[in-house]
Image (tube, rainbow, N blue to C red; front, side):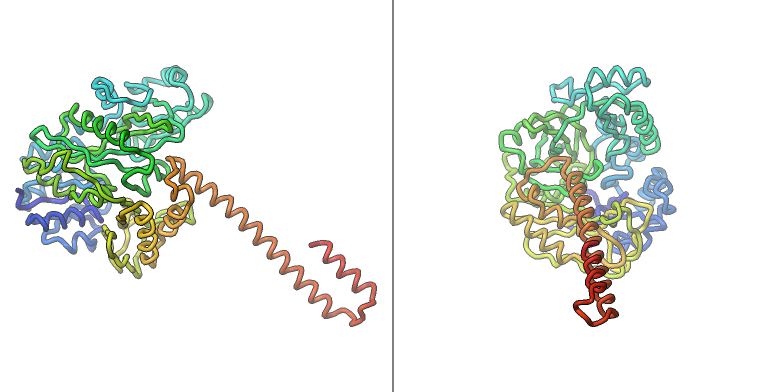
Length: 500
């Protein structure tokens, strides 16, 4: 086992990995940018190295600087967490060249699965069902139109090197195709330095289901159940749960076996996630493979009792898995809420700034709090606004939901805005409570909120009108002659009544 590793990340995931290292007797080394010099992961680590300026390209994306720090610190391996360099095959190659173990897959499967069209080709070759669409990037706009007509509207334009909703556009009719194509190319170029785009059939009312897998260097590959990831806003996951209320045991088994097949087809090692789109008839199609630890990994840990980060470290150190597929028996239900520094009442705009006061969830049975901040911390504007993750477990789905509502009620953050109030609306919504939701759930919820807002505005206007009327009537009556039979007084009061 390693004696010292470098954690090439920040925030709650850096703290999460750091704690796993401590429990295994491994010394963690962390890095920090100018914006993160007082961050929680820096406070907790024995060794912390300044990696550069606040801008990601000058710090957490600076491959050469990170490799140099790893060598100077004596770290034998690097854990990338998620985001930043976690799925960068060039970074993996540099680690290999420097004789440093990358805690994740090797560069070849990472590069293959990172290219959406290439991964679709490989999956099709080995019999993994894929969404109808292209297996090669588009050549030009003429190619775009002919392929869109072949696939049939609505279609999705997707970045070949993409992820996280970047370079993704839904096109429902031919007239919108050209402008959407140019926007997708531009966003893909700026986000991934790769403008290549391909087309895929748009699946209506789908579920986004992912399967967690683990694979060691001895040919053992297992799946650890599924995660329901359909609560998304602009293609970004917000809340995840396991098991999925939509997936039955037969479908779970089939998807798990296909996920293992997909991983083995590319010689995958370490932790990874195979993502699927599932239609209303429970037909499922390969979407992509995330060659890293997922943000939502804690829900799988809560129901299986398996520490995925420790498994990552053991696999990277050359150890075999300690369990077989038959040993994995998930119990209960788990839900995760991603707590972002965003204002849910202002189009989810980021809300950086100082956390003046923090009242963390009190904990209790079945409550987990993965946090990367503290009271007095200045939330930087340079990075993803994820503050923490709140995870609850229950013997049933209903118990997990109620426990989450209780934990959220105890969670208070002052000085910045968070999306905690938004989760309460999600968890109390009848569709969510029934488990009857798809990837369109949040879009529908926001429309409901817009309608409610319109109704509230109407009620407010009516209330203001009634108040104005009452004040006018009272003022007029007070100054009028105190004679009930005065026809002018009664006539004017009647006129006010008619206006209302």
